[in-house]
Image (cartoon, rainbow over all chains, first blue to last red; front, side, top):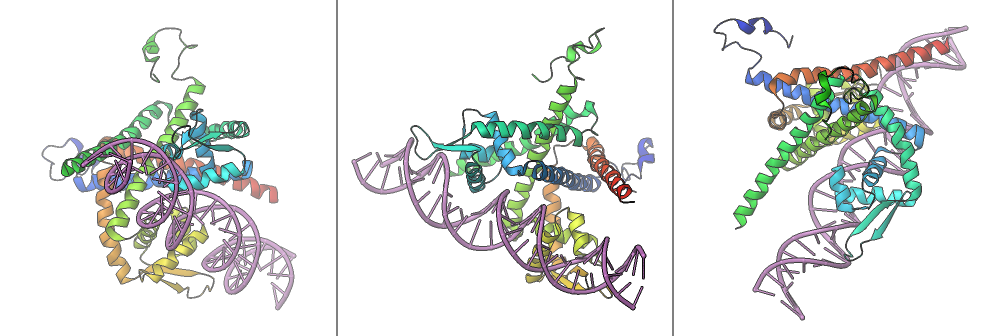
Length: 182
Length: 182
DNA sequence: CTAAAAATATTTAAGCTTAAAACATTTTTC
DNA sequence: GAAAAATGTTTTAAGCTTAAATATTTTTAG
């Protein structure tokens, strides 16, 4: 039903009808796409959560923090973590706290700046993460298998661009704000 | 850097090198895609949350429930809502409770089945939702604007297929379980 | 018909999440 | 060098979220 009008494709003088390029139609398609993005990521996240729980007694947020730390062996500040995971600052405090309790990460003071906390994986955290990461890798590979190989790269870039576009907007806003101040 | 090897495309006997089809590379690309899916949806959700809060003093989960109810004018059961939103049953209980407190939805008993609760939008809920939906529609349109029009439909289908693939797996498992029982 | 199983919804405990406020420290400004 | 601004983190209150346990009702199997 949403695909009707395809027949009028190459018929002359159909601008008024032209359903595919119609602004309202495009808007509705974007909305539908968004709902599908949401549902699909939610679906995958639900699957991952269940598996982390049953196989490792672990949670997704804790895995995400550990993955960030793994990619930053010299340690990360709380702010760095929060930006990297795109969650609030206070959120990270709680998750790191629990990881400290479990002996998976250490939180130490910065050498010169006493405001700053540096978080690193402990050796146990590293080994625990490695096990989980291997499984996680396999799960993602399985869950994303239906996506044609030839499209993976393109899709990744598309999503990246989507975020970048917003970031540019953000910069514009910040510049505008700064200008107002001057 | 991740795009090297493209040159070897049509050179004879390069199977050993052929980096693009390499199984490990594909796995890593899938992982990268997943991380990008997650970050992009999270980014958009964060934006929507902020705007719902500042413009309507509303939350995303409550909007989602109302949107589901809007699409089902005859009302929905709690289970139907929970399945539609892909969140847990108990979760819906709390959100609906708050919506009832705000006078935006009603929860009534089912005619014949006394276990079942039927949730519907109140007139006020309908009018509140309509206002929010219009803005929401515009926001999504703005945030997804960088996606080429020609790809929206295809992308939507791709994501749909991704979910459907898992659902089929699920059915297989259920059938297996049933078989064991017999 | 009735006991067992299944379905519907809520409650509970624990954890995740946010925005805003509070706090601590460092840097900048005058 | 003190006041102000900025930076880094935690705390707080409210809400979201899940899995598991519970309560109630309906359906099913015998």
